[in-house]
Length: 293
Image (cartoon, rainbow, N blue to C red; front, side, top):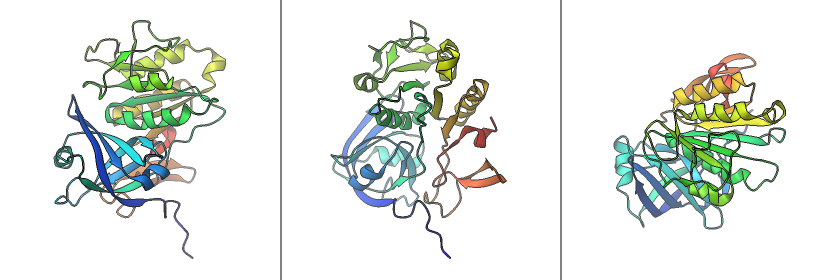
């Protein structure tokens, strides 16, 4: 008997038109694509698998930062690192990119944990923006977004108009888009950027958590995406404060749809350790299952 896989029928292949492609400091780019099927089905934590160039058969996974279901668009943030993203950075408005998406299991907020602490690092920032966009429309949730980067942020930080009790008064730098949404955010960096917290984003998160009383802390749930060392640090922070935490993993992928198992990682399950595919079993997992925290 063949069991229907949960991701069957939910991943679309589209010839997506490039509507915008803007470069930012630190070899970072924001790509806006016309991909209505993907935009309609995407959830915070989803990603797309993009053919960067017709001459490059291997696709690249890129997290979704925003969607506009009415316009049928998705926004992606990526950093130019290797051959694939270098080729992608040369693509022009009006050209088309073949993509598969949305792929992956999304973040799952909990109603009993309305204080959502979103922690993004580097190219792990996009899923946090997407999740913040979803939570801002639910009055029961109170998201706070903390972002860390050692290269310039892919937006122009501005002093926030939203006060965040528990954070140092001198830490004012925020993402303007989130301020416009009414979602508080703060930035951290060890690169000396104006208005940013001088240190790791996890240290900034600790400041906020320590300022909460016991009742408020019991309402917190952490969501995070970023480089592996940062994810492990966030998982340890969550364990220290006895908080549930979901992490979005980043792995190299070949097929992106669960066929090759090239992105498999060891995850703790009730039946013992098991190899899970980051692409379709994740990329979002419980932090304790990944890090034992």
